[in-house]
Image 1 (cartoon, one colour):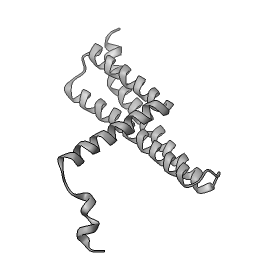
Image 2: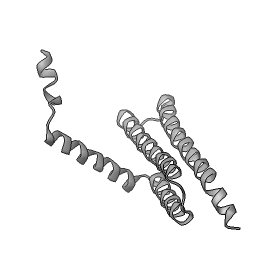
Image 3: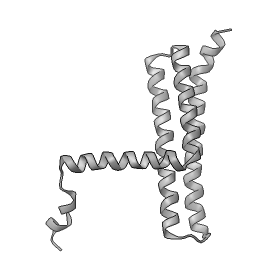
Image 4: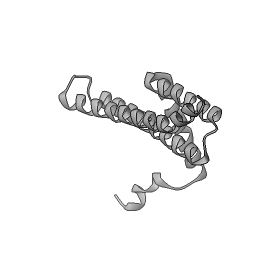
Length: 131
């Protein structure tokens, strides 16, 4: 097969760009419809955003918190993709399938803990100053 045919599906176009946005939104929508952990992180993110406004945190602190929250969302979505891929390949309880799913879940857990610690570092001094 010549390289022109192989790359034919990769042709750059505005329609392809719009399609990629559509597929991303579909993935995000699927995650929020089907993954409880995304709802948990979504609620925690809303709480962090409300606290940021109430406590009037600095621009740099906002940037750090937004990055942490986006990392958690991205890792959760990757974990969902790993789980779906493993389920596509096998419905059996296979040791390697378990490792893939457990490690994806652990990555999401670690990112959530990291975001929580970051929020605590930022918010606790403001909360202490209130008293």
